[in-house]
Structure formats: C-alpha cells, structure tokens
Amino acid sequence: MDAVIVGGGIGGLAVAAGLHRRGWGVTVLEQTAGFDVAGSAISLWPNAFRALNAVGVTGELGERIGVAGGLRDYRGRWIVRMDSGEAVTHTAGAVIAHRHDLRSALLGHVPAASRMAGVRVRSVRLVGERAVVSHDGGELTADLVIGADGVHSVVRAFVSPAEPRYAGHTAWRMVLPRPTSVDGTASWAETWGPNAVFGMFPMSDNRVYCYGTGAVEPGQHSSDGELAELRRRFAGWCEPIPAVLAAATEELVLRHDIHTLPPLGTYVRGPVALLGDAAHAMVPYLGQGGCQALEDAATLCVAVETQPDLATALRRYDELRRPRTRAMARKSSQSGFVGHLSWAPARVARNALLRAMPTSMFVRSLARPFSWRPEDGLVEVTPIRPAM
Ligand SMILES: Cc1cc2nc3c(=O)[nH]c(=O)nc-3n(C[C@H](O)[C@H](O)[C@H](O)COP(=O)(O)OP(=O)(O)OC[C@H]3O[C@@H](n4cnc5c(N)ncnc54)[C@H](O)[C@@H]3O)c2cc1C
Picture 1 (cartoon, rainbow, N blue to C red):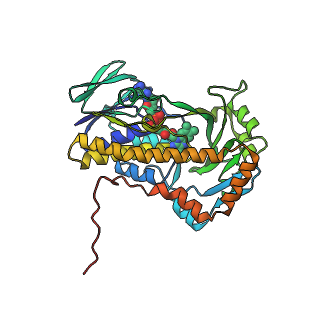
Picture 2: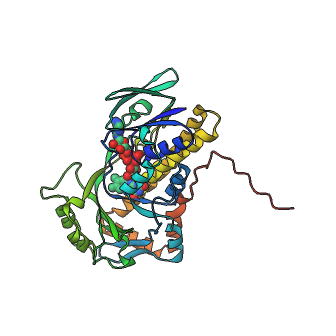
Picture 3: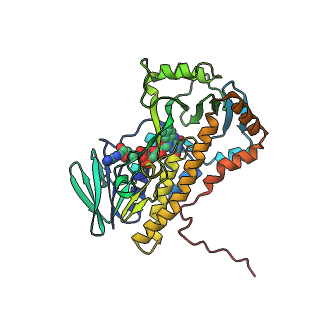
C-alpha cells in the first residue's frame, strides 16, 4: 500500500514515520525548501510521547523534565501552585521541546527518498478508488492521501470545506538562554492579566521558553517591532517578565495570529483523510494542538494495522478522532477564555475560585487528557482473569 502525505509538519512527518514503519510506501510533499519550521518550542505532554512511541520515535527528545509550575496573576500572586508531589508526578512525563529537535527526530524516521521539499500541492481528486494529488511539478496517485497541510489546508476543500477564523488573539514566542533574573522554580508559571497571558517554562541546556498572548487586530504590526510591542504590553507585570523581555532580542521573537477551525462534519472522504491542524486547528491554551496531531498520526497508523481493510480503518479513525479533538478544542477555548478575562470583578472571582480549589483537583483535571493510548478503540484489551 502507498500513501501521499501533504505537509511535512509535526503531523505529516509523524504519520509518514508510522506508516513507513508498517511497511507502507510513503511520499511527503512539503512546500518549504527544507521542511523548515518556525524556530520556537512546543510543550509535549504524556499523550504525545505515547503517540510518538506508536510511530517509532522514542528517546530522541532527551530527558523529560516535567512542566511543574503554576498560575499567577499579573501582580505576581499565586493563583494555583503546582509544586506538590502529585503535580510533579502528573507532569513529569512532559517536556518543552525545541520544534527543530522534534522535527529532526521525526525526519530521522522518514527515508530521504520519501521526502519531496519545495513542492506545493494544489488540489486532490479521485480516479476510481485511488486519490490523485496535483502539485506544482505534476501529479501523484496513491491508495491513501493524508492532508496534514495545516490550518490553511488545500486538501480540506476536497474532504470537508471550512474557513479558518481569527481567534481574536495573537501569540509571541521565543526561546532564549536563561537570564540571571530567572532564578529557580518560582519563575515557571503562566501569568494571567487583563486580556493577556504570559508563560515562562524551562527547557534543556539552560534555555527558557516564553510566550505572550494578547488581543490584536489580525495582521496588525507595531512600527517599532514585536519586541518593543511585547515590552510595552507586559511592562507593568510582575518580575521576572519585564527582566526577561529586557534580556531578549528582536530576532528571537516569533509572532503568529491564532486561527481556529469550526468543527468539521468528517475528517475522511474516500481514501483521503485530514490530520492535525488541517482537521481541527485549535487555540493553543492547553498546549495540545501538536499533541493532537501526533495522536491523529498514531491512531491512523494503528487503525491501518489492526482493521480488516483501509475503508474500515479510515472510518474508525474518523469516529475516534472527531470527538476527541473536538473536546480538546472546546477545553482549549474555555481555558483561553478563563485566562484572558478582562473585566476586573470577573478576574477577582476567577482567582478566588481557583485558589479555593484543592490543587490535586486542578492537577487531575489538567492531566485527564494525558491518559489517551494509541490503541484506544482499535484493539480489544482482554481483561486479565483473576487466578482461580
Ligand atoms: C502560539 C502557538 C503555540 C502553540 N503551542 C503548542 C504547544 O505548546 N503544544 C502543542 O502540542 N501544540 C501547540 N501549538 C499547536 C501546534 O503548533 C499545531 O497544532 C501543530 O503545529 C500542527 O501540526 P500540523 O502538522 O497539523 O500542521 P503544521 O505544523 O501547520 O504543518 C503543516 C505543514 O504543511 C505544509 N503545507 C501547507 N500547505 C501546503 C501545500 N499546499 N503543499 C505542501 N505543503 C503544505 C506547511 O509548510 C507545513 O510544514 C501551538 C500553536 C500556536 C499558534
């Protein structure tokens, strides 16, 4: 069997690695010249590592250092502090990885002969039972075509047309050497202010990953650069945020307007399937968009391995992935809404409620999605009978 995968991002490379491992012929078509990724970081939670394992990527992303920390208000008062044993246990299987490292790990499992860089796909159509992909340089036909081409997917037009929507927020991200102002675990937090959020978390090699979000008109850029904009927006916030921004340089700052998709009626049409942001782009407030792309890839690979034929595998993929990703998108939106409240009395009430909640309850609700397994819904697990 053979597959053409449109898009060589996280999801596309993961599914290519997993199918190749299962004996499929794969071709990945990527529009950038060298499978380039924006050079920032990504939080990978335990569900993502189970998915990576299912597609054959293990151990390449280094030590899993955990993402313990907490939530603060912008004056620096803790709302939730997750430095308890339980929080550390639940997040110990997570890591903030550099996107370049994740991409390199995935690329290492996709043969060079399977990768076509600098190729832009234009459309997909059916000829008989097979799918045909038209790209800049010609056409390719395959048993299975996977649209892993991101939120502005062209493959989606064939499967389930839908227009991305601007979420009303933009995000700035950067990875920088850990400044001296960042001392100890008290700095690791997501900080909530009026209609804005700033996060700061540790990475390997003494680096720090920071992100800031805020309400901005789509595409609106400040004339003096993104770092100046960030410094203005977060000027009155608690330390070490202003100190970290003072230590940053303009070329480190990446900015992305956040786009989401409405729920699609299906992720599959015939032998064409959508995966990752092409199917379910969501706001990033739970750090799960990429993890869900990896889950999609793992589910698709386990489905083609365990189901009697491709059509059944794709039907099961659709049945399993739509509810899961829809729930995650909804939770991410809720989390973004709660974190970006701007009306002061609402923020005070929110903070009081969260402070009153036992940390263990907060941690458990955060960690609930992590229990996902690639074989869920696809492989029957025989219960172990107690010995007579
Ligand atoms: C600010 C921000 C922070 C985030 N933080 C996290 C996080 O901490 N954890 C997490 O799990 N997720 C996070 N996400 C979400 C995550 O980045 C995405 O969900 C993930 O990158 C989706 O992967 P993908 O492979 O589906 O799509 P993409 O990464 O968008 O890859 C699509 C690929 O397809 C290529 N392509 C597009 N069109 C074509 C075409 N016509 N022909 C050929 N190639 C094409 C593109 O060049 C690209 O390489 C964040 C997102 C944002 C915006």
